[in-house]
Length: 200
Ligand SMILES: [Zn+2]
Image (cartoon, rainbow, N blue to C red):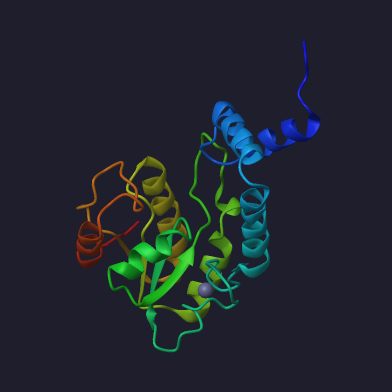
């Protein structure tokens, strides 16, 4: 059986590691990149290089930005009494769209028994240290309204409870099992508006 060039196999393998890219898609993308103009393909490589060189993880909130502290943490106009805990840095833009002007804390994931993701695999310790030091008036747990997001919120609530801060959760108006990335701006704004207190 004829084998493919090792460099082609390597590209397919790299693409296959991307989230949501199965082996067939990886193969199709790899052959697409070999067929298009060389410059077109290399622009992609350069874009990856540039973004990796330019984007940093904020040492305060773990958001991704061109600067550390990120543009949210370093903005003196933000409401520092409010802390919104989210799973993923992509969700920052969703909450900004609703008019939210407090601070964020990005967990960089959620707890998952199936995937073996434990509190120490997320930025939980940093969150607890931040809350203990900064004493925000409210910590809103804005993890996704699905099984793992709810489980993550429960565990965080247990850990935040001894610190004596007010902990809230987004309103139940969010469709169960949906993700913050999917819901419309108005639904998300309503969910923010109707935040409810959580107690352990
Ligand atoms: Zn930040």
